[in-house]
Length: 447
Image 1 (cartoon, rainbow, N blue to C red):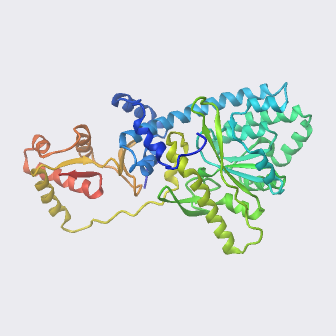
Image 2 (tube, rainbow, N blue to C red; image 1 turned 180 degrees about the vertical axis):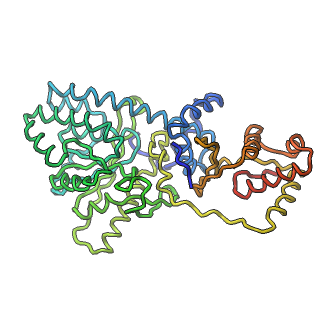
Image 3 (tube, one colour; image 1 turned 135 degrees about the horizontal axis):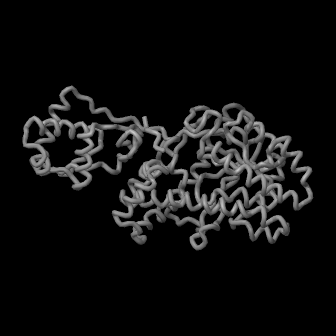
């Protein structure tokens, strides 16, 4: 079990952006990278690195993936700070001027197709915008509010506590400018919809979503949060799909609501402008329209196909711009881990020790398997997490010293073994530990 560590169009080759990072300027020397990792380890770095490694490990060098993970965490802080400053100032900016052209200037995202949004809302079933924690996702709701769309977004408790008051203040100013203060107050008391956010852990949050859709409003769902009454680690209402060649189990509530209400779904992503980091470009996917008549099997097929489509929509952009994929910090929660291959054999340790000794004598070098294991610092010490199985392993202090030495010296050889232990019994103990580490896959052998 894992520890809880706390452009307009894509190129035809979806991995071109990732591979292009290889040619980018080297922003991190080893000392700077190590310092950044140490500074960010309490802010989700290890999770971010683990999950990026699981999808980029066969495409980029390990060091480059570490750099991307650092950039991703830093971008999270930068985007959050910029949005909070923007949101705090926005109510005052719309207080004295309600012209549409002026509000458009205040919006941060270009590329909206408002004719498409209006045509979907013309069905009178509401609209569900599905997005991911990627790029400038925080600005999607405010952009639509400034264009006079009524929106509601389910979020976790921390986000609710942070966003409810400033978004409500903005919404009040938007309604006040239109002379609809009384209407705003009445609707707020009746459904809470004009607070713009609802906490997913509240028992009545589903009812508020249904009421918003009945009033033909827009719901904005961050589907990769995968949360609900049972939290992000709960197993209720999940469906198994594929994502970047991994098997994942994701919450399917958004598809079930769409099917029940007949509400169209619009996939959306918000890319950051490379020239202006606080502005961006909206990417719209193809609308998903629920079938009118459907039996139980058809509903289940719609639910599965919808969730698969929504995550497939993210795939090329996560590969093209991994440094903008904030959701990589928690994508391990979705993963269906691979089963560990069994190497159990009553004589494995004895035979393995003899074989290990022979290989070292013949010049083999033992190295850390950095593409399949992540070494993470936790409150209780160092752990090794398997990228494939997500299982974590904690070793004794002296085994950790061996692993540290392998990393520090870029490999372990017979010369190292002779230098650290002239005692045959001591060497046998080290060899046994190395065999066990090799069986787990933590170390590899280079002849």
